[in-house]
Length: 334
Ligand code: SF4
Image 1 (cartoon, rainbow, N blue to C red):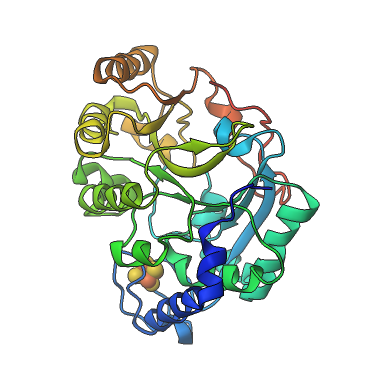
Image 2 (cartoon, rainbow, N blue to C red; image 1 turned 180 degrees about the vertical axis):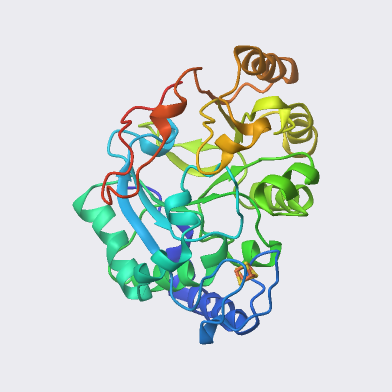
């Protein structure tokens, strides 16, 4: 358990957490929770782009041992995988739960059930944190569940594990609630975001979101056991054929965020889902593509973080038909 009381406990005591939950839930009536601003009434379960209604879809809850070492530690990260998504990545390794909305509707739960599952991760499994995966379309439900979980005893730091296609207005409501942002930086070109993830404005929104996250939590802070308590980690997945725009994205990160920002460079790309049928995405990255990004990291002076080794791409593929243990990999490769 964290020695430092997470900020959401103080927000609960002052009533601010309840105010934020109410304000966020009210926005579901004309949904602008993510940058798509669909305007549908999710309180009446009208479907927007994310096919998500009033209740959170909780696909899997488990202790995850394959995240970055400061997140997984020895006890695992208490991972809550939300179903459906506000993106449509053709290579999504979580496509069984992110792009299968009809099946996912059976996984809707009331916020108090989500709160109880968080307590299970904290008290029964002894996880180091609660790690919300793909939370961008469920920010109101996440805050509602935290509001229910605090009086039950929730005290773990909360990790917001996101594609970064997030609304600034929603992120501001998370200030003081989220301790750790684990944020993807996927593309440097809207051309590829549009073609491969059905997002026409990823670059602008993701960069603004990462700036907001950094302003809230700053550089990484770990405890005496090396477990993260607060901070931003930016994940960059290397894609084949330079589709991730690594040079542009990492240079932006150094210039606009900080050379001290913590990065997690990921080599695990595998042509999952529909990518095997798309020539530009139909293979793992090459050694030359990998080496080029490593050279860039060195040249830019990024010194804090992790780089995955080559050759582990299949090891990271989850299978969400194994509900309590979708990941076979137990140790993060550095
Ligand atoms: S959260 Fe869903 S419904 Fe709301 S704006 Fe985003 S995609 Fe649309």
